[in-house]
Image (cartoon, rainbow, N blue to C red):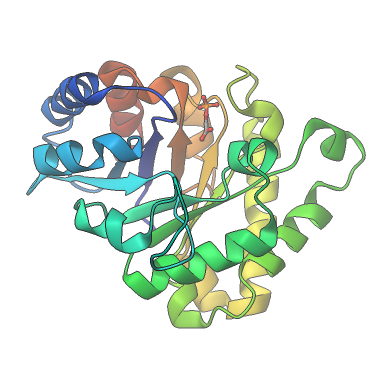
Length: 253
Ligand code: PGA
């Protein structure tokens, strides 16, 4: 059985004092959670204080991006080692906002995954289709291709360390959620694809999160689907009460 993992993507929100306040509130709400994995992904600037605040608790910390070079003259970029030195152990890679606004491609996602794994960070890798792609009926073809290119050259041991997030672009920050049937359909497809590449045994153990307007009100029906192993939450993770409620729903399924 796969335990669920709920991750919160704080995006470009929360100054350091706000981040400290939020994570303390979350800590307080999730003290009794034992089965469900919890990850918070604050901005780079707050990784250190958030990691210090959650030390020895059931909350893990992740960054929202990574650069693939180890060090060098790359003004404004952050390396894996820098992330690891803050106490963070996860990193979101290939979020659709990075792909749409900052020119990330499946090829850069592939480099970032390899760099993260080399340094010992666990990647949360995002895939998803736009509304136009869904309406054109190419969702699965596109996601199959994203997976193939992003995971190029990764062996089974490396693949076993990944978390995958299916995030339909049209559902992110829009209040529109994929129906449980739509989400389950793509999640099952992703697991099948992983099975083809890495074998069904490993594929059956891999965590595939759903992301896109997940809230306390829709979390139960989404998280109850057979192949949905958790959520990558944006908007609803910025309030401790709604984030904790989603975690509690996951814990009780
Ligand atoms: P949302 O964001 O929950 O606000 O739609 C999800 C995400 O971008 O990961």
